[in-house]
Amino acid sequence: MPPSEQQELLRATAKDYAERELAPNAASVDEREEFPEDAFRGLASLGLCGLTISEEAGGAGGGYVDIATVIEEIAVVCGSSSTAYITHVSLGTAAIARFANAEQLQRLVPPLSSGEKIAAFALTEPGTGSDALGMATTAKRDGDDYILNGSKTFITNGTHADTFVVFANSDRDAGYKGINALVVERGTEGFSTNHLTGKMGMRGSGTAELVFDDCRIPASNRLGDDGAGYSVALSTLTTSRVSIAAQCIGLARGAYEAALSYSKQRKTFGKPISEHQAIAFMLADMATEIDAARLLTHRAAEIIDSGGHPVKESAMAKLYASEVLGRVATKAVQIHGGTGYFKPSIVERIFRDAKVTEIYEGTSEIQRLIISRSILS
Ligand SMILES: Cc1cc2nc3c(=O)[nH]c(=O)nc-3n(C[C@H](O)[C@H](O)[C@H](O)COP(=O)(O)OP(=O)(O)OC[C@H]3O[C@@H](n4cnc5c(N)ncnc54)[C@H](O)[C@@H]3O)c2cc1C
Image 1 (cartoon, rainbow, N blue to C red):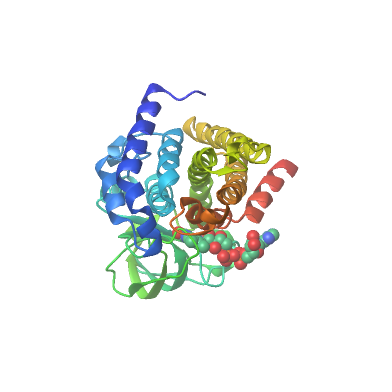
Image 2 (cartoon, rainbow, N blue to C red):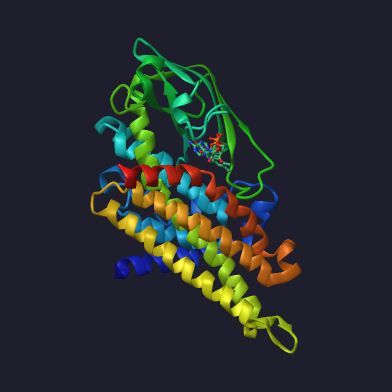
């Protein structure tokens, strides 16, 4: 479906903001592993932190095509900012907004929609990533509270988030029905975070380890019914994969646009390298694959916007877009020759940022598992 006038306006707003405010800081955010807090506050001031949240919960009531459009423009210039933004909007805030009861919707969501508070989503543990059901973190019921013990790792926004959606096991014998999703606020006694530094890419996205030591959480902070946590996680990941796919398209566009421009300036053997067919064909493949990835991504986003739950389609979009990004980033460095191998070349950064999109929110192998189960069932 062609973009609406409103979506064109949203794209223009996000693009203008990204180029003006995010692009100048992208290299230092990466170099210094610095959480892009100013970027986050700026996106909040544009009303983008609650883009897909209902108006009654302080959001803009937009859809997933809208958010895919915004994320693509952010990711073109700054991968780390796009990761922080996606984690806030599509993981943490989306999980709460979708599964909150009326009281929680009024209490927890407005400060996230406005961007006054930052959200994170904590599923992965040192011992379990793909196999989330094997989680060791426990949430034992104690009167009107849960007592949380254990740890989470690789949690995006964990260094700066205020509000965390934490998954924990309340009844090991109940399998997936024993998992609960609890909202934990920073400052709760027994809860601490440690910055995990040294990432290959997306270095500003504030990754942290979370530690819970007899941390008391009111049962009124549980999302959904007792034992609904695993559904909260899977359902949120299904829709958020559309956001990751859009991020891949943005990063791929950043690499492609840099390579296109460089190929017209750099001369070898008396002509611009773009006039060598080997380079021109690489550019042709890059442009084609980016468009194909966007079509898959917007198809999944449109299914969400029309009330569906595109388990297979969002996995296809995330799998394909992340692998397109890997190929495009590799070609973009190749087109830059030696220049592309050094900082501050944007393609050097995108090449490093790209890899994690094949790992987080479910690895490529897990996406293939989801797709194959769906087509074989
Ligand atoms: C920068 C970064 C940010 C992240 N942010 C978050 C976050 O905000 N919140 C969060 O909860 N998590 C986050 N993660 C964690 C991420 O989602 C996990 O790393 C990912 O799901 C893979 O889990 P794992 O690392 O434990 O790998 P494993 O599950 O141990 O997998 C190792 C390898 O085995 C493969 N594999 C596993 N099972 C199968 C199978 N059944 N069939 C075939 N192959 C298989 C995997 O594909 C992978 O190649 C983040 C990770 C990174 C690196």
